[in-house]
Image 1: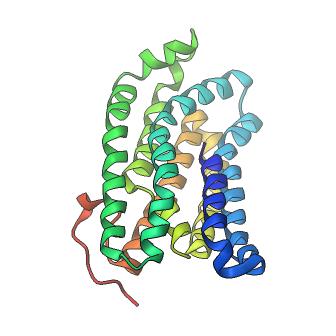
Image 2: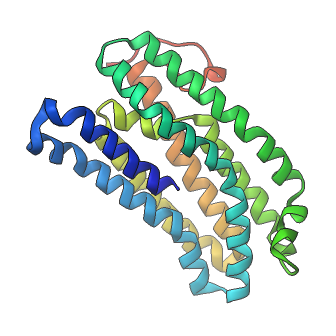
Length: 239
């Protein structure tokens, strides 16, 4: 779902900017987005691939069930971001910075509110939701709870990834995603042999958290506001 969102974003960017920068500039602009979306596609499947190398098919199946449930938290951000992308781009490139900030923070608040009930339901009753997949998935309860933390951080930080794409900071986001993917690989190699599916869940959660929190801090330093207003008031951006 995250990968499909980036495909949608690139389509929006193409329509919005093609007349302004021409085909050559559009290719130059889109290349970092291609790298970032490729790294995301790799990172979101990395834990399952590496877990399959170290563990049995049954363990991989349990982990996939936990991952699918945890990713329910990302549905809100994916759908809301797809609707918000044109507005973000229009406000920013029109110079309506205050309206742009308000729109971003409202979107973040909406995503957080939508994700909270899912977090509490799945996080506090993991066994109940895992039972929907049938018998034998009980040992994925802790992994599910760990993954829920990572995906809620993703929701709480708001549309930081989308924001960086919309305001011309796609290269910065590209490097954030690449470094997070490398971290994910290293952590999976270390943690899966010791902790199994829980190790994969820890590696994924840390990687998601690093990606989102790094983007969040970058946005605050460059533009002077937190994407989620619960983190504090706006401050002048640092040059």
